[in-house]
Length: 405
Image 1 (cartoon, helix red, strand yellow):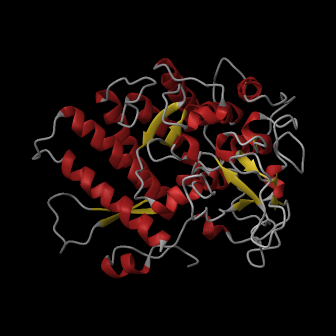
Image 2 (spheres, rainbow, N blue to C red):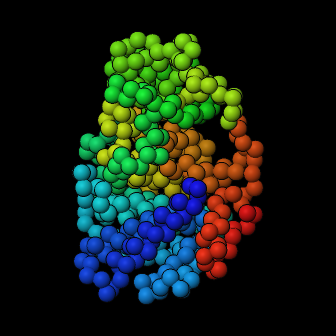
Image 3 (cartoon, helix red, strand yellow):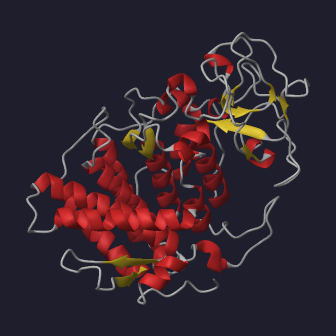
């Protein structure tokens, strides 16, 4: 259902944006620029997730089957839309106005596009000239006033910060994604939370701190968060919730049978768990309204790490990948690294950007998506893209199912 819903939503967004771009519309130059950015955004995701993009012009009615662009053809269209949008969009620095398209958001998506170009075109390795473009677009974002910000979890609130390049107001109606974070019992939620998803201990262990607890003073780096023991923050932790949990009065909580509610590192499998197994995660905190008013889509720390990766892949810059990574780590109260590799860059992106939509994209780019891990066997490379939904294949004969499905 999610594969189909995602396909339908992004393709609908492409068509709606195309109607605004249509020269026969009464759209202003600013509206056209914003629509080109939004069309590029939606097309980027269809290209990335599914590997082919259907496209219909405003003149074509439902009786016309949309043409289907390959990844390479879609790449050119996304690049063209973003380049044209960039020239016309306004400069918007850190402010409450970053929920609209801006030069910074166009620069961000262009940087992301060039960083993944060798994946989309199937050339095998990154081209140094493309990596230099990534660096230039990230530098342009910084020139508009964006920068790294300390106080990691303060970034994920409705308040203005220097990192949020583009955000969405999701609203309480988006129950699935609200549920991702608003999953704990809080004082005004008498029904309790639904207890949430868990992460794996092997990912939790990539953060500095005590392996078995995550309370203030246990030596954890800032991004790992903490579990409050004094009733503060509604009794709900930030980041990774492991060990004994406490309520809003600072009283140790129990599970339904009356045992101490201690979230454990162990996760037996996809079945056979109970309410205590597994490390829970939370980033947009109920204390701050979850993320109904401020769901980050593009963030400067991501761009910062994209620049580091682009340098590591051959791009030209006046700084090193190591200095950029350590700048971020120092800000997050983590020990500096002595060197960087592909694996350490991927790990750093995981630590900084967990639960921010980019992990699959990163794993594909680093050649890790199909590898085996604790609860999953290795899979074939065709699974780097999703299948085309069956209903889409039936409605458009120009679409062909991706190989392997």
